[in-house]
Length: 172
Image 1 (cartoon, helix red, strand yellow):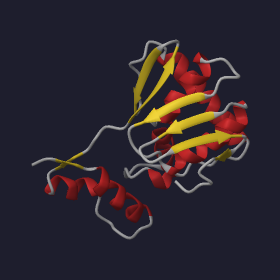
Image 2 (image 1 turned 180 degrees about the vertical axis):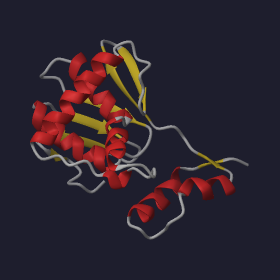
Image 3 (image 1 turned 60 degrees about the vertical axis):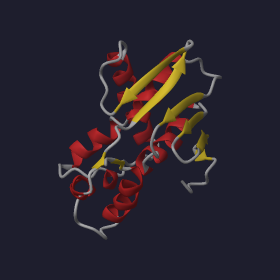
């Protein structure tokens, strides 16, 4: 019987980030016959739903989206954002870890939202999993840098980002 991995993975990942366990959750998940659900985010623009996965370049506006994302990363770094590479569990160089973080689906979705919605409207993103700590932090900086309200509905709660803070008071 194949079971969903989410509960198991969410339990293991913080322990691994904190150094309490050394084994990658994926290895023990395989032994337990658990499958990994692909993370994705979606956003509605002009009465159409746009879905994004990690590193997704399949969207018709992918080049424009990633150009916006690159500019956005520069802006938020200027105002104090520091990527938290502890959330990247791949054994790669720090620079590559940063690139992985910037390709999370919710960051791609927010970049799309910035180019696809008018300024007074909040950007509303839905995510099928819990938002990672780095994306949570980045969204706070993005709301400051752009002056936009961003709402992210993840698997646990709504996060309302505005002027650099989140409605969850960083209890996510």
